[in-house]
Amino acid sequence: MSAPVISARDLSLTFQTNDGPVHALKDVSLDVAKGDFVSFIGPSGCGKTTFLRCMADLEHPTGGTITVNGVSAEEARRNRAYGYVFQAAGLYPWRTIGGNIRLPLEIMGYDKADQAERVKRVLDLVELGGFEKKFPWQLSGGMQQRASIARALAFDADILLMDEPFGALDEIVRDHLNEQLLNLWGRTEKTICFVTHSIPEAVYLSTRIVVMSPRPGRIADVIESPLPVERPLDIRDTPEFIEVAHRVRDGLRAGSEDA
Amino acid sequence: MRSVVPILTVVAAIILLWYGASIALNADWARDKATRAGTQLTFTELVADTWNQRKPKLPAPHQVGAEIWKTTGEMVLKGRGFSKRSLIYHSWVTFSATVLGFLLGTALGTLLAVGIVHNRTMDMSVMPWVIASQTIPILAIAPMIIVVLNAVGVSGLLPKAMISMYLSFFPVAVGMVKGLRSPDAMQLDQMRTWNASRFQTFFKLRLPASMPYFFTSLKVAMAASLVGTIIGELPTGAVAGLGARLLAGSYYGQTIQIWSALIMAAVLAAVLVGCIGVLQRLTLNRMGMA
Image (cartoon, rainbow over all chains, first blue to last red; front, side):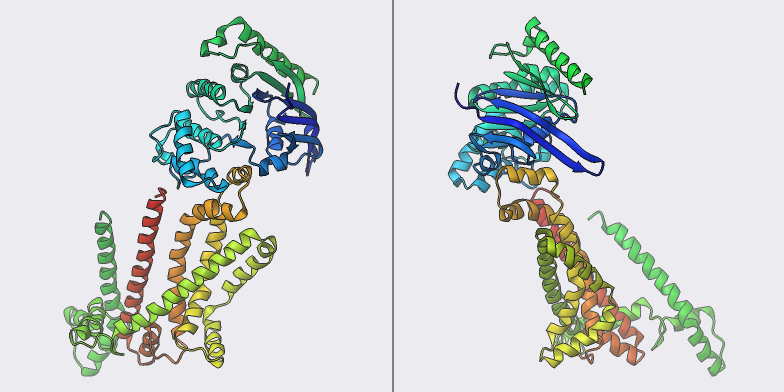
């Protein structure tokens, strides 16, 4: 096995608040291998988003170490090693869909021809071809979120960090996007870290599921998924799927009991 | 164009009220005259008199209209549209100082806002002064600005523009601070994930996000600029400009002249603010935000 893409050792993060310190993360250790699809699941306050933000250098851990692509999280951010998808699409209303996807490319200094070619490619990838000239308000919520994923895919980052990207969408749209995301992951060979609080979503998507528990935020269980790489939506009715989901649920329950 | 009917309705209501008010306010003088002449006025005669006095307390709309026509259109027809007796000339003087003051004020306000948003020290230190500056009555410091600038050899357009700037930078500064800070934490985080420089964050995110705030502040600033210029014209020895016209009118009790200058100022304000409205619509339309 090659060197892990993301490696956390005894990572801790304590926020100082007026009500005393809050241990958002405590002694979290985890390796994410290249090409993994890792889901982080847990109740709110378990530090899953905080962990993701530490990988992205949006939060600074107060203890332990974290490396991304073998360098510090900050250096990885400076190298533009990852694309980050937030819970809200966060498209700029004054830019077209194409303009929004071009935004990080402009910031990173890609040349014009390359920008146009990349925008077209990622729009096709998320099945939004032909929507380049539309403004965000002309698109549905699910389409906006797809555009924001396209934006995170447009530049050469082999890590994709996703913070509950489908959390605000309805079940039907969500299923569809999950299927598309798996498809995309298969084609692009990116390493994906995915925060969610939906058990079926975590089990359906992941090669590994990291179950976290709150107060202090820590890892309760890491489950290697036995499911095949090829996953049609109806895999969710198979006994294997239900068993994995069961383990996740057990992990969540155990984590909240000893807190 | 749907707004034409409501606007005309309001204008008609104002004119009606105005005629009514000029009867009420000018009636005393009309009765006085009649008493001295030993005659009795019928109601019709009374109304006719109140609407046609030479120095009424409140001139009737048609008197003001006639005065405005006499000092604008008629002079243009005579080929003297830009003589010192023409309201066009005085409006132009006020207009140029207003626009200059407005541009200076917008620039100053924007610069201050950029500084306040990007620099913690400025954030803590400048804002209280910006607010304090507006608590000083402009009427008190306008003559001093004129005198001080005159002493260092600056006179003419610039001192008035400075007073106008003094009033107009404030709404722009306050509005732009709000506007430049309008991107939320997520959008700023997003810029961070792309390792965008502050420069890029400013031009690609903060500045476009502030545009709706910008234009709203500009409208307020434009109105404030005009007020500033007119106030600046009052103590300058009053040679030119709508403010000078107002002052001269009040010296000689020429109420019709005062009101015609006031109406011109209102028209000027409406045109200037309207121009910004058009600019706003064009810009935001192009940005897909209207």
